[in-house]
Image (cartoon, rainbow, N blue to C red; front, side, top):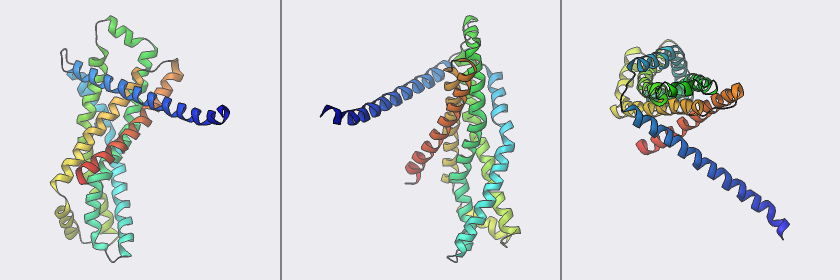
Length: 264
């Protein structure tokens, strides 16, 4: 009887260990984020570091964000046209493109692309500082690493992502416009008028809310995994991988929850 129960007990032990580890990780991340926010609100402040991170996260991400948006908008218009032609609903292309880009594809794709670029960079940089004891040196110099390193990245990411999403939305809609007008035979004025008619203020607001939340997760995961890295170069590599994967998962999960709450 005991031998027959062993696999069942092992299963529940594994599930329990996973659940405990998950809750412990959520707790550590929450404490890390709370500590960063609380310390960032108190002086000293580092505005130059914030501007530097805004440049690195926002401006230098524009090329990849712009290319992703224009290609996605054009591909979306093509696919909607092909699908709509089966139902004689080709005229719905402008409306579906603008709604799809603004509500979902713009924020999500920008979040995913920036997560791959920024979270990995943050984790690698801070992780290297951790394993080479530069973070300990900052503490020795009475410089709080939460204020000096993490807070500027966190706030810059929350500010930069909505700006990037605004630009990506415009470029994505423009990509759909180019393909619809010059390949699918739509009239430019009617396409733009339909897009403007179906784009609502709530869609744009929700897009920016999603972008701010995604930006928070992008920076938080990069800084958290970099700050906790250990074990030399291998540890930094593991932290970089974990930062990107966890940021991607949180972005997709947050997108689902926000979409359900806003449009459910």
